[in-house]
Length: 243
Image (cartoon, rainbow, N blue to C red; front, side, top):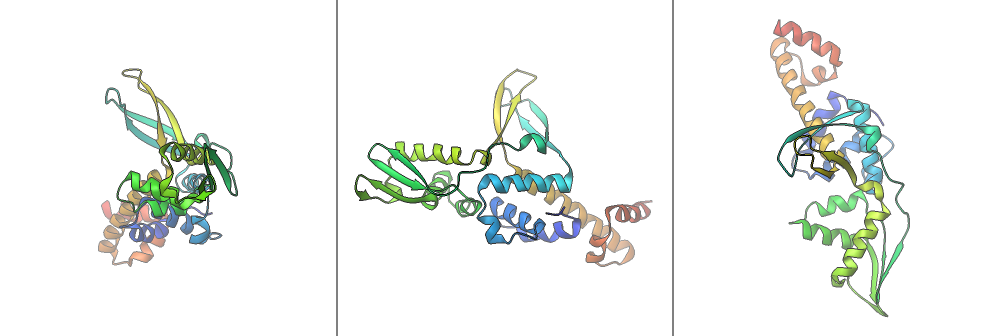
């Protein structure tokens, strides 16, 4: 894995326009990992891919992540400083097929992968997205001796399956404990590294394009040559232009 420089980030950001967040995260990881192609990265369990995204943040931006959230009780805005080393959690995902038995129902399933998230991202709503995830991860379902479609699972069985899927990949959901200094309310929030990473890459891409505009206007240089400059050299030339 390598850190993403400006000449990687700008085309990556451009290609990501119109894609879902899971698809953007997948492209970002592949761009940084020469050892992974898209199919291999998509086949990673959710927690494993998110751990690699944390590694990529660390390499590209350093260990600090500055979060922002509003208290759900009083609306107080909170700055939340985080570190990548404290966000890694959970054991590795369970591998192979697993079995859930609930009453007369037996369900064989596998852990969710990042490809499942990419597929579910196109759903019309959250309920449809959950249905897609369920359809993809269930290998077989039966009631007694009869095979049944996934869509016929009773609500209680589907709920138990959802809990088993969470337990099968504990690192897939990163939660951060929070406390409001204004009203003392305490709660936990889900931390989405894919969202943070793409937002920061987008901000970096826009800054780089503005720098390209400034230097191209001043010196007539080509975009690819400006993006290939080291940050220190680009800053020197920008300082000369701006006086």
